Image (cartoon, rainbow, N blue to C red; front, side, top):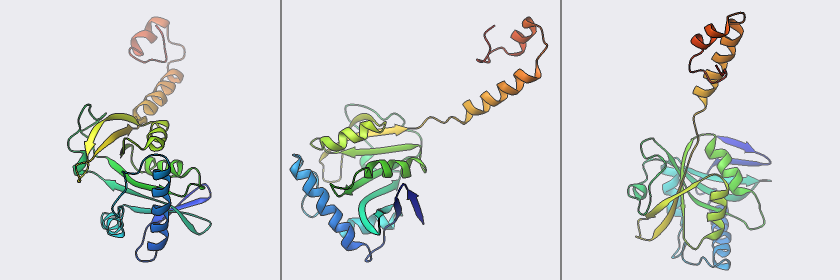
Length: 210
C-alpha cells in the first residue's frame, strides 16, 4: 500500500529490493549525527538490514520515495514496546491506551520536511504516538517538540543506553463535534421558548449563557 504525501510516497519497505537505498539513507543520517556532535546514537553497524528485516516482520517498516528515489526511512510499530515499559524521572501522558512508536528515522541532509511527512502519515493512523531520541541529538529533540510531542522522561533501550522519551496524544474531538451539532439542532428547535424555559432545557449546554 502506498500513501502520497505532498510530492512524496510513503510505502512499506521490501527486502532485498530496497536494501541499497535504505542503507544509503542510514549512512547519510549517521554522517549528519556525527557532524552535529551526536556520534554515539547509531554505532557498531546499527541500524542493520537485520533490524530492517525485524521491522518488516512486525509490519512497520517504511520508506519515503521522492521522484522514484528512497529519501527516508522510519519504523512505525504497534505497542507494546518493551523499552517503554519503565520510564524514569517522569511519566507518560497516557499509559493505559494502545500506542504506536516511531523509530529509526533517517533521511538525506538535502531533503527537507521528512519528519513532517512521517508525522502526517503516522498521525493519520494513530492518535497516540511515542518516540525517543539520544540526549546528544539536539536536532531531533527540536523537531519532536516542534510537532507537538511532550517530553515525558527517560527510558532505556535494549543495550541499556538511555533515551529521552516523548509522547503526543491527539484529543478525541468526536464528542465535542457531536455535542456541537446537537446544540445547534436544539437551538433551532427551541426558537420561541421563553428565556426561563431555555435555561431549564439547555442546562449544562455551553452555547447558551443563562
